[in-house]
Every structure is written in C-alpha cells, then in structure tokens.
Length: 343
Image 1 (cartoon, rainbow, N blue to C red):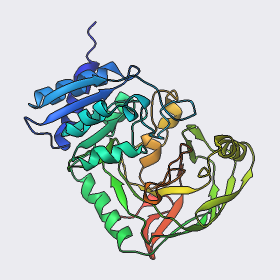
Image 2 (cartoon, helix red, strand yellow):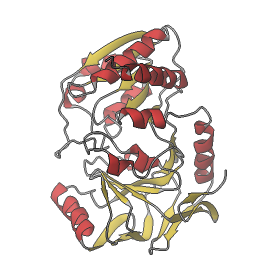
Image 3 (cartoon, rainbow, N blue to C red):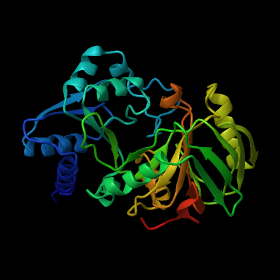
C-alpha cells in the first residue's frame, strides 16, 4: 500500500509558498530540529524547489531556553542552538524566506526581530497535517484582518463583555495593532500557518475576565469546566478565583517565578472561519500547537507574559481563547456574543 499523504502535504506547502509570494531564484531556508516532522521538511523542500527557488534544509540541535515542558506551547522562545550561534543567525538573515518547522518557533525571541529586520520573511508551521490543509489561508484573508487593524489603529478603547460576567476595558493608545493571516508575503514579515486573527499589544486594561465552560486554556490545551474570575488592574491580574482551573492558573503564575507572569500581553479576536473549536479535544497534546483554538472566528483571545512593545521578555506565556464574548472598538461591535459582525 502506497503512502500518498505526502502528495497532499506537497500540494499544501506549494500553495502556501505561493501565498508567501515565493519567486524563482529566491533563497529559502527550511529550518528544523531533530524532533521536527520529517514529512514537513520534505514537503517544504520539495515545494520550494518546484517553484524554482534555491533551497537549503538546515537541521539544528533541539533544546529550548524556556524552563517548562515543550508540547507545542506557543511560547516561541526559540532554540538555544540558534540563539547562541551567529552563523545560524546569519544564514537565516541571508534568506528571502525561512520556513520555520521547529517545535516552538521564535516569535518571542528577540533574535527573530533581528532576522526580520534583515528583510527575511518567516512562515512558522507546526500543527497537524489536516489542520494545515483544512485551514489553508486564502489571499483575501489579509484584507479581512487588515480592516480590523485599521479600526484598532484609529480608536482609543476596546471593551470586552460577556454574559458570564466579563467586563474589560482596554486602552488602545500605542497598542501597536497587528495581524496574522497565515502567510508571509512582505519583506520582514513573520506569520503562522494556519492563523487569521487581529491583535494588539496594550499596556493598560482594567476590569474583570470571567472564563466560562468551553473556553480554552493554552498551552495546557484544556477546556474550562467551571467558571474562573480574574480581576485586572493596570494591565495586571490581581486576583484569581474559582476551582480547579483557577488553581491551575494560579499555580502556573506562582511556579514560573516570572515577574511578568500575571501581566496581560496581546489580545484581539479570531477570524478563521474554517477553524474548529473541537480540534483541541480531538488530538493528543503533542500533535498540535492549537491554532484552531487561538484563531476560530468570533473568539476573544488574550495572553500573558512577553510584551515586545514594552520590551518585556518572559517565558510565562498563556493564550486563553474565549467564546461568547462581545468585542467593541470605540462603540463599534466587531464580535457579538461570540459571532463575527459582517465586514
């Protein structure tokens, strides 16, 4: 019996690299570590070669600087082998496109900003094969998220409420709105396949966040079963109350011994209409990063820990995806009761 799954992967990676506007004679580095998926390395390599690019597959030693288990956490601390090796960094800076197939990526490692500043674009890929294929982005996704960024950029306040009791007010001044659209087509751009979301990096937020049953805690990849209430003042979590999941969060904050563990980081809403809220329950924890949860259409996603706009480095990174919220930007609703408002 032939294994034809590689054909689907080659097709998907080829379409993805076309969205990344890979041109013939550009230089591609496929970056992997020993525990990366070999079929992804082969598919990315084959797709880049088929599109006429110069391609190098580079496998560097594994090993994260983050003091926690690595099960596709999304913390993006990078690999020690690259962080401490200027030759590896120079290789990535010299590429037009890096296909990052490492387990955690480098999104919160300062060295990634240096690589992007050289004009390199980076696409990070690590979820399960059918997650990638089901959520393959479309060219129009960039326009959809850009409209959300434009709204945030011209506004002063975002308010998030829910029937469960959430009522959070976020100050948008200097919050540096950003987006992910699932492909990296501009020089110096990082993106994540799959992802379609709008986010910002505020400093000040105040109020209350109430997690309800079905909300998703990442990187634990667990669904909330009983309500958790988090009091927020000045962008910091001051109190956590509830039962099992509240204890999980409190223990994470305390055990991290990180001064920024209870500080809010990026927040925004998902626009990925192909994403499946059930996906987190359908896979083993080591099989996926959890981008279905982070980007499903109509979610409110908020995080803790690292904050590049404030030069705040931290390994204590949580992403929490909430359903049923209403998100308003200067009085304009973008999400109502967990459903996207029409563009």
